[in-house]
Image 1 (tube, rainbow, N blue to C red):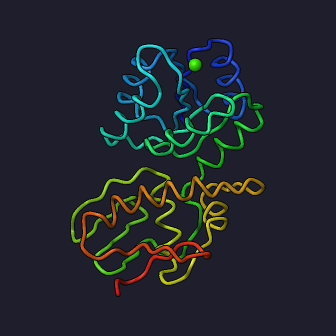
Image 2 (cartoon, protein in one colour):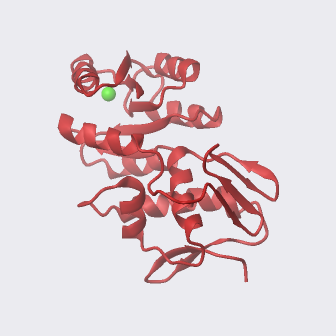
Length: 225
Ligand code: CA
């Protein structure tokens, strides 16, 4: 993958870059937010490793501008230790995953690899339809009522898992496993944030909601009542 690391601590940025380059990725580095944003918009790398606390433009602002510009890059945010608020803000702003500092290079590589795998699940079909919601997996396109809907890569993955089996309830844990491939860490808050993000795009602008919460169970996508 082509990976851009935006991290202002030169030693950490260097460690990250070397660790990922050793695993066969192509790396670029920027050390402040504004420059990082320019590079990301110019090159649309496959993945951004984005520190949140950056000079000139903080990571959240970089993320917001990238998503506004419909930049398709996947984004892994680096958060300060124990800053749950940062993590939640990062995910709400459009990040695909997060890693809390300090982390080992093995953890980082595992997160990067999981983000590189396209879609949390495999399927026999590439086109899904539910009511007026259409999903084209090959071209990564989603429309509802003929209107294109821009989804971040991980939002797309969550929707894909649901759309593959309409009417089938998924627990938060199962969604987390299928999409983020975290085997040991059941981070259900992340799933909730992504469902909220999806609803804003898929359901809120339309009259009939398709994504439903099943109390004590999880989520299901199904035809409106
Ligand atoms: Ca920093």
